[in-house]
Amino acid sequence: MKAKVRLFARLSELAGTREAEVELGEGLTAGEVYQALCGRYTALSGLKGSIRYAVNGEYAEPGHPVAGGDEVALIPPVSGGADAV
Amino acid sequence: MLFEITSAALDPQRLIDHVRKDESGAVALFSGVVRNENLGRRVLYLEYDAYPEMAERVMREIAEEAIGRWPITDVAMQHRTGRLEIGETSLLVAVSAPHRTEAFEACHALVDRFKEVVPVWKKEVWEGGEEWIEGEAVRHE
Image (cartoon, rainbow over all chains, first blue to last red; front, top):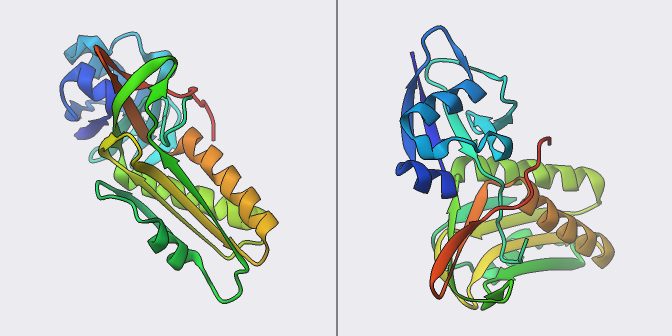
């Protein structure tokens, strides 16, 4: 069972990819999917405090379970619009 | 309602026409544009990234919140992605209502909410460097 992971903005530049696949094994949470990716893309390490998760396009807690075929997104703090934040 | 992430140039009149109903006495339109300076740096251009499918869904959710809170007749939002030059429009939020007070208030609240929860990111590019601008991390809905 695999989950698809999507990365955006700074996270995609750090990882050097916008998409990855993670093997779920016995089942993982959204937070554990991030940890698994950190093993592969070490530049992603240490960002746990600022990342939010989305599972299948909906914001989800780090403890949200991920099933085969799910899409997990790592969401850095958003900054749409044009004003200074 | 209309919610869109697009790499094409934004057209304010299209959104105004979309939200205007015969019962609307007011249309409030917010236009976010790229400016040439931030934190004392001379900005050359901005680059926007987005999670389009989720962004469009979250825009719909915040529009429905606004419709539950104010007597407004329609909402439309668009955000552009890719490279935007100084003076180009990155965000449009249009709200129609029978009266101007609700249109202004709902439009203002929607722009603020957009910047908190809609998965869109900007990178500032200035002379000699670039940086992804990150808003405040919001831990809950």
